[in-house]
Length: 518
Image (cartoon, rainbow, N blue to C red):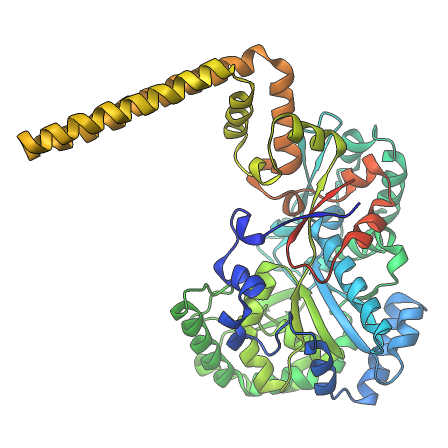
């Protein structure tokens, strides 16, 4: 089914930077190298690539060791083949659903480029170096009653040690809780079998995430890249060494860029101050932040393979390692790449086309029917559950009551307007009292209306259940569905082929948020 579209500017919490990137790129063009909406942008980025044959050969060897043999790696080994890259933190049970949408967007773009005569492969960067375990140690699913269920693994509890999350073994995995939530769905057992295989005893966060994503997206022939691999780190060492030597200059450029973004009315995604470092040291299983006076890191250039980049330097490292023509990201990543552009210019002299991932709300047939019954759009549900209940109650209220409230509001306004005009002529100082009275009367009318709406919902148990279902499915805990739930409950309910349906529905020529009925 062809998806419906919602403008991102009509969605809650869309940043001004992302809205302008999507719909008014001319306003943000100075923060990026290429206009992703221009038909020649990808061809221009391909012409800028200068990717040495020896680096390609070294990366192919490392990637074959990580991935095994694949048609995508065979293609990538050929001179002239480019990469479409995306990535994500290695979250529990594949992380939020948008992780899948990122990979699908990259695969679709790689396929389209290849068809246009620019051989391309999709590559997924596993963010295994990140050390914020609390960001990746949980996942949300929903159960048979469509109520959100939180699943979590315990922290390693090592007295504050900052370990790269990709190397952390998983203990006390909540597999039973996941099975209890999704096991009764038509495809629940099939999904649980795949999850148990991916999260076998002794597996790490990175290895399990990679295995599960490989199963979920097995038809896309993605190439996965784990940057903790020592061989990968050796290949990237020259770029890191150059960054260490230029640290003070890079820091100043980034501070200038942050000021430029803020002066333009945008936000700086990655906070930066005088103490912020672009580097971490990987040592004794930890990721330790490096801070030096005057940003002098020259003595560490010989240890470049042991240095882990921060969020602003990491994409530059990624595109040094790979012949990247395009990077697929979400709103936050597109924002920090507006900062990273100054590092790209200094260290690489090029930057890939930065483009946004496909964005989806999955709409079940039941939800579609309910929206029609209650005369709402999907966007109307992006409110808290109580407000949604009031909206539904308003639809269910007898027309005579709605009419009476409308007449009461109009009558109050009309009579108070007349009174205000009379008092204006009599004594202007008294008119403010009329304004206060108007507010109080209208507030009491609205308060009475809400009481009636709550009574309607109390009497209509079905409508109350419908409101809960819509809220939990479409705007759970006041979050967009794709940013809250794992993809797993949707696959368990509608089948593993759902990934193929989303792939077919991804429209690279449409920058909007897609509403896909499944």
